[in-house]
Length: 148
Image 1 (cartoon, helix red, strand yellow):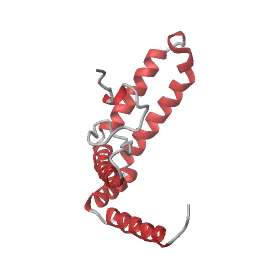
Image 2 (cartoon, helix red, strand yellow; image 1 turned 90 degrees about the vertical axis):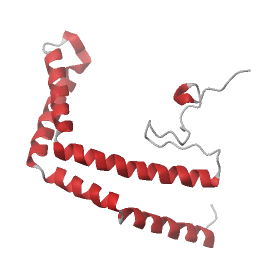
Image 3 (cartoon, helix red, strand yellow; image 1 turned 90 degrees about the horizontal axis):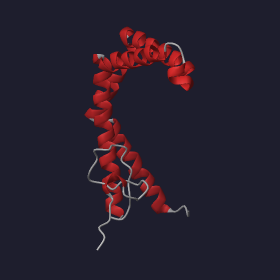
């Protein structure tokens, strides 16, 4: 890559775009909910419980149903994960995280399409229908080619 004035202009534009995102209401809400989640004692307890149960499960997972207490341990992990996910602070954070990710996905899609409609993007969101998935290019993800 040749470093010239155009590269510096692009870098400046990227910095301005990043600044706009950082100063956005969505980012502000994301940071607020993240801070609330990180400061919540209840979330800390739920996370510790989940990680302990997950660690217990990972010790016996390779043996599956042959390990004593496998099913109970597996169900305990799922229950702990569900309790963590349904916590109000965690749920609020996840909603804001998804909204921020959607904005970043849309920016990526629009930038790629402005350059060329042939550029494939991987939005990271299976429900992001406007862009093409940059995966295998096979029959998955609805990229099926019609045969004549």
